[in-house]
Image (tube, rainbow, N blue to C red; front, side, top):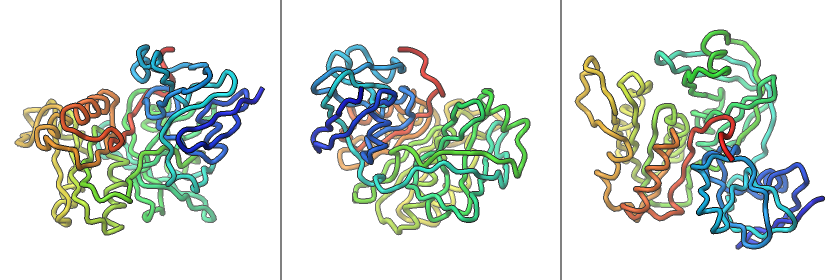
Length: 340
């Protein structure tokens, strides 16, 4: 039986069908709730149930603690209403008019930029263009019905190809990409998805934080800012284990030389002796807090492994005064939830 959901404080309301989550129904009706992974692992869609009850679904415990559930919090990418409910969450207006499409694409080029990192360039049909915001992602649709999410590394103005950065994690799709995929292969995808993108209506300095291939959407955000001639100060911290993992190191170095409002700080956690590394070492989010003690007037964008994103959110907001609503993140999460 369909149920009604009302969003506070906007008072937007929509109907949720029996087979839908609250997030799926909201997106279908044109209301964009802040979200990321859509599989209960990143916590971006977390909000409060003000009235009524929900089935919490399956999710990662790190994304929603038992204490938060007791306070009425839920993950709306997993929660399904048990009757009419009233919720409180952050709505995103900028993506409302962007249409989510399912499209075929051709693998135009494959570039192995490091031992375990591949850059894919995907070509859309000649009659199609994908409207998206810098930082959003697409879901590659696999033949068995599963999906794999990848952030687009190209900015919207540079849309001849969709650029994806893939690390070989050893899973079925990674194995396919690194061993069997060929140029001119055909894939299908759905997108654009997610609410991780540059908020261009602000004048605040921008702190960008990436780990590993979390550099992909950060790259898109930086190139969008440059293309729009955005004068805001931008500093990028890119963390990796060894030098080879900074697989496009020369690109942000070039940005720093060409743009007076841009700084680049690479950080290695376990540099090799053969790296001859004289730069910063340690955890990348700690490098940020050492350099920027007061973030009260900033915006921060973090993308990478969940542990880094969670630590950055905790320390930036609790130690450095970053406003809670000025931390934007995209955590790279498992393809299926691990616990309920």
